[in-house]
Amino acid sequence: MDALATANARKLIEKYSIKYPQQYSVEQILNAEGLILEEKPLDGCAGSIVFSEKIGIVTVDTKIKEGAQKRFVTAHELGHFENEKAKIKFCSYEDIMSIKKNIKDEMNANDFSAEFLMHEPWFVEAVNGKKLEAGMLKETANYFNVSLSAAAIRYAQLGNYPTAIIMSKNGKVAWSAINKYFTFKWIPNGYKVNPNSYAYDFYGGKEIPSEPEKVLADSWFLEDRSYRKDFFLNEFNIPMKNYNAVLTVVWERE
Image (tube, rainbow, N blue to C red):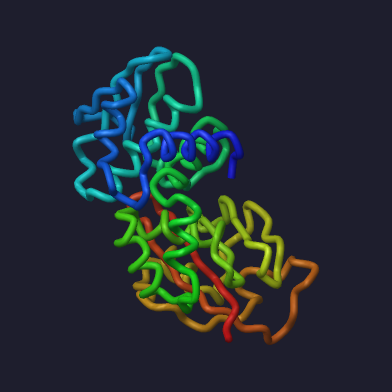
């Protein structure tokens, strides 16, 4: 997480005395900050912003129908406004969905959006003491009105259970995020999705389970120096069919 982007989100929460999720709509905060929100068709982009130091216009693609995704895109564009100076930004769907992590400004805008919509103290309180499972992640996503993938990524950042997030695209690992409690620490970018994983079935055109399944650590962490044979994990996959990508959540079994 980018420290400055996170701090900018927290400043805005404090500025408007926001005490709980969804106290105000993101559009209300945009307007208060001098931004206008509009919805228009965008070619290949989820959102865009044109802005000077004090004013700007945020545009969200009309093809986005889900309220949670629209909300995250809007907060992402707000992040560009709070993090940067006068610019014109066009944000692809892959930028917003964190499918790739190679453009710093886009990563920072996502960090801002995550903190603004799922402020760390709120998120920790929401998940504290709850067993990590698919139902809990779905419940958390609904509570914060964000996508399941956004809630899962946030859990990997802030949750207190040994967890890793793996984003794969076209059958190869694009990036991963592993929290400090997890036994294994490394999976290389470009690593081919292992046939022993359920994510592999997605790339083979098969239906994948909608609930967590038991898999060997071999499925993902054969190249980790801490690899252990016969070590089992839970694997839960969130398919992103439009991008030929899968967000995989793995956590240690009790």
